[in-house]
Length: 447
Image 1: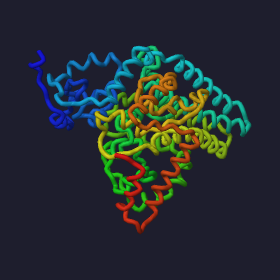
Image 2 (image 1 turned 120 degrees about the horizontal axis):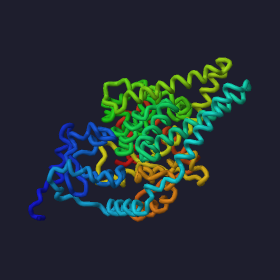
Image 3 (image 1 turned 45 degrees about the vertical axis):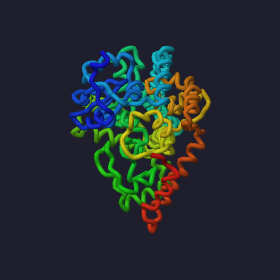
Image 4 (image 1 turned 30 degrees about the horizontal axis):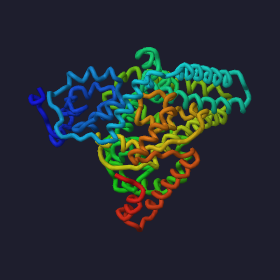
């Protein structure tokens, strides 16, 4: 009977957001996920960040219909009493349901097959060119092609991390480890750890790891106050070294992007050999070991050190385009401090993302992630569907007066450099107390 239901208020739900006491609400029902956190495929951080509130929109975005059947065992017996669903959320849920009925989440096309074939062909050409040719130009071309391979392998790892691209979960997991760990040297465990947190806390300065690049980059003057990263559990100190580096960030941005891959290698090792609980740690380490066997061996087959350095730098330079793309998608988006909130989840995604406009024949180059907002709203949607739903998402944003930011690759670069330069000037001004820089902050970011 309706009158026999037990209710708790939104304020009471907020009290349950500590490790060991994690409650969430989904479609009015309250669930205790405290014991499930350590086993959550998306990682503990996601539940820690979202606990104590309604997470219906986020749950719909990241879970297939089959996941609903597992919620029953976490039900507390309570219902949420006074939660108001926004009109935006209503439309978003309706749209997700329509996409599901149309089969868009299951219609993956042949993208995975094409990706596998292209990776095999590219790797074969790289190995053949290095081993069979003595031409410096051929070796340079092989280095550039290896960079393209790494970019496309990263997209495949990304796709298989968000949804099942293979015929079974076992094959999908294999695709993650081969495309990520074995081919690129970047752990899929590290990617899941940071990427899921990024999606949930899109452009939160203290919760989103994809904006926390101190002491090298600062996309907001809020970083000048040495804020604490909740994700990493440490202070992002704005000391004289950080001030110097940030004040030159608009000059160092592209050079750092070229060698940015080195940082990803380091982050992989730091995570895999940390005390954190890592799913499939042994398998991840094995995959990384495979990479650090074949890649140095391949480089050693080049005739001299100058060609080896050229080969590595050429491959890194190509991957810089992908690193740049990822930063363009978010650096100029609106930022805020604090944890993500379930009642404006859709709004936070639209505010924090920037699409890159391009012709359809360039979709392979961007891996579908030029439709960054579409991907953030529907992360389980195959990349082949993102261009199709873009007009619908744009109309929904227009209906609710929300931003739909789409720039050309060139304009996105220009906008990003302007933002970095503006923040750099504030960092450079040693005479201007940092708090006064918030006038710039008020104009350029929104909480």
